[in-house]
Length: 447
Image (cartoon, rainbow, N blue to C red; front, side, top):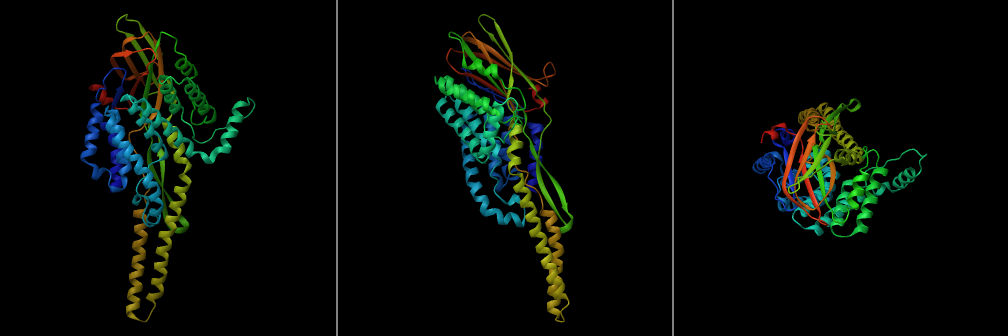
């Protein structure tokens, strides 16, 4: 029942989710009405939507929604609590595995997908930045990077080969599983630049480049080299406006049933399904309120959170499949054993024994039906991560600006959303980072 409700909740984003915008730079965040409404709905219907085994999903949803509505303190609190639960449940899931063999994976406390555990730290980092807590923002982005490296420690040999191939123009390109986030390195670069640590910022730029050359399947778009160089080399007397755009909805899980003919059973396997992209181009412009001079620039993709989600899910999909096969065998063997014993007992001359044999036969038939009914894949995951991140930058004279970010279906195509930032104070040597999110909902534009 709860699985069905969770699937309904995944689809509800089309009705409730919308646009969220957050910014600092001497400005106050505007509330995102639709996200606030969705957050309120979740808080009022927690029991029906999640249940006791999906606390992590709830925490991720509420933490992201709080971020989108500009309640950064609440977002940090909820995501921190969720991160702790992920650690606890990951260890606990080992002891719960036996129970999952008997029923399905929904009896286990959901410990989150790898990419959910990773990116929650990125959003915590941005929240700390918006609260003016730069040191804490750096701590969180470091945690994000450490988690990325931890996931792929077993791919060290392949990583070395990938780097060697990248340096050899004649070698075939090699790509390894996700281990390094270009977006995480970019935010670290901005933070370190604001903190006056140029050496660290240069190191971040090198690791950003490394993310593209060693993970070509995940970073299947152009590296924003020029933009990064401009961020590292802001001329004296000038200021820098940095823009971060999150767009499109994250993948969701669906299930496919595979019949196991030899065992007269069925296996349910979860798959990640991508959503139809709504945005593929974002632009940013800024107008000086005093001089009326306008600066414009297109933004460049820096991360496909969607690709990372699919990749990290793939790394453990084989274990999910193996577990499903084992569960099916357990259920089928239990039914076969019950049937076999029942057949022997029914041939007994003792009426009581024969009756028990009949009961075992009936239990076997019920068990087979139950095995089909209870065989369902674990489709739990958060609904509110974006699928894509773009970055942009404008080098301007210090002053007060009106800044606009525009989300387009494609370059020169349909405008999906426009967000304006009024009276933004831009200072030399100060980080001015604006971020906006459009996950896709035409109803939002009527606000």
